[in-house]
Image (tube, rainbow, N blue to C red; front, side):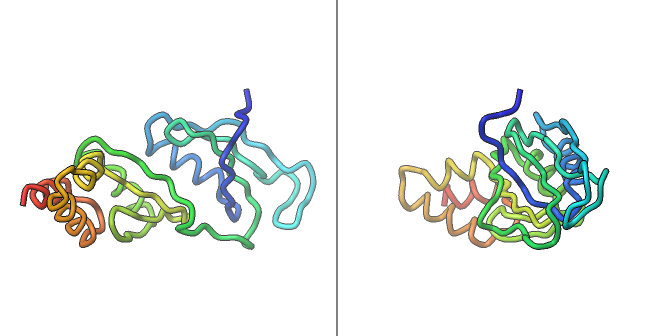
Length: 159
C-alpha cells in the first residue's frame, strides 16, 4: 500500500545507491519498489532507475533520479534520536565514513548531500533541563561539538 504522504528526495542518478545505504545503516529501513523509466527523459534513458521507494527508520521516502538541477540543503534533514554513545557513534561514523562530512552540533551530511542530525536523547534532555544554568552549560558544550559526546554533555550539565 502506497503511503498517503511520502518524502520525495531528489538525486542525480544515485537514488538506488542511497536507498540501499540507508537500508543497511538505519534500523526499520528498507528498499522497496524500484521503478524504471518507460522512455527517455531529460536526465536519463529508457530503463534507467527513475524512482525508488524506501523507508528510513519507518518514514516512507521516494528517491527520484531527477538529474543535476537541484541539490540537497540543510533546509531539510533527518533527525535521528539515539539512545546511547554507541548508537550515536555507529550512525555518525557510517554516514561520515561513507563519503559524508562532519558539520556542527550533531549534524553531518551523507555523500549525496543529505543532512542528518544524530541527536542523543541525553542531549535533548540536557538542553531541556528545568535548571536554566544546567541547560545553558549543556547547550554551550554542544555548540563546541561536531559529533555529540554524551559524557561531555552530561558533565557540562552537572557543572
